[in-house]
Length: 409
Image (cartoon, rainbow, N blue to C red; front, side, top):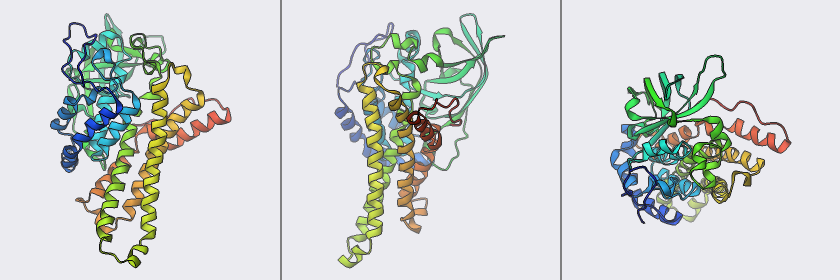
C-alpha cells in the first residue's frame, strides 16, 4: 500500500493507504472479517454499525476503493467494490450495506464540479451518505440555491456521514423543474429522526433526515440530466470511463454485493449446522438427507451464479474505454442482473431458512438474522424484478424504453 498526493486545493497528501490491486483489497478486508463478524449480533441489536468498525475500514483504505487516485483514492473499479462489499456482507449484512453506501456512492461526488470534490475531500476521512428522493423546495438565489422544507428517508449510514448527496429539483418561475443532485454538509441537517425500526438490515441506520433551510453553493449542484448523459462537470476532470457513465448504470453496484454476501452467509451457516448434525449419522441416515443436501447445493449454485452475473457486468464497465463501449443490450442487462442477483439470493436464503426447522425462528439464530437481512436488502428499488425484467425484454424485442421507472426506496 502507498500514499499519494492528490488535487485537493491546499490539502496535504493523504495519510490513508491506497490499495494497488483487487487482490490486495480483498485480502485487506478478509483480515478484518473476524472482528466484523463478532459484532454482527450487536449491530442488529443497536441498529447501527459501530464507529470502531468504520474506523477499521477507513484505516485500511477500503473506503477509497472507487475514489480517483487524484483525490487520494485507489480507483480500483466496480468489480473490486462488489467483491469487498460481498465479503463484509458475508459476515454482517448491515455493515456491508453501510460500507457499500459510504464507499460506493462517493463515486457520485466525483461527478460534481472539482470545487465540490475539494470541499469534501479536504478531510481525508470524509464519508458521504445519499438520499436520492429528497422532499422540499429548491429555488435559485445569488451564488447558488436555497433549500426549504427538506426531508428524506432511507439515509443509510448517516450516523457516520460528514456530507449527504440529495436529489431534488430546481424550481424557476415559468420554467420546467430541473432534477438536480446537491451535496450538503452534515451541519445543514437539523434533525436525524430515529425511525429505522424494521424487520431486517436493522444496523444500516437508514434514518430520516430533516433540513428545514439551507444555502447550497452553485458548485455543489449537478443536473441529473448531465449525470445520466455522462456529461457532468466531473467527467471533464477525471479520465476514467466510469466517470462518464450514466449514474443509473453505476450507482447500485455499491449495494448489490450485499444480497450476494448475505446469501454466502446463509450457505455457510446452514452447511456448518448440517455438518455438525450429520457427524454422527450412519450412511443410511445421511442418504435420507438427500433432499436437504440438494437444497443446499441449489442455494449455493444460485448465489454463485448471481455473483458471476454481477461481476461480469462490473468488469465490463471497468474495462470500458468510453461509455459507447456498452451496447443498449448490455446496458439493459445491468439492472436485469441486479434484480436477478438480489431476488435469487433472497430465494436461496429463504429456501435454507425453510429447511432450518423451528430452531431457525429464534432471535438468537444466525440463520434467522441472515434471512431477515436477505429479504430486507432485496426490497431496494434498484432490485425491483418486474421493471428490470420488462426493461430488458423491451430491448430484446426492439420496443422503446419505459418512460417511468419504479418508485420507492
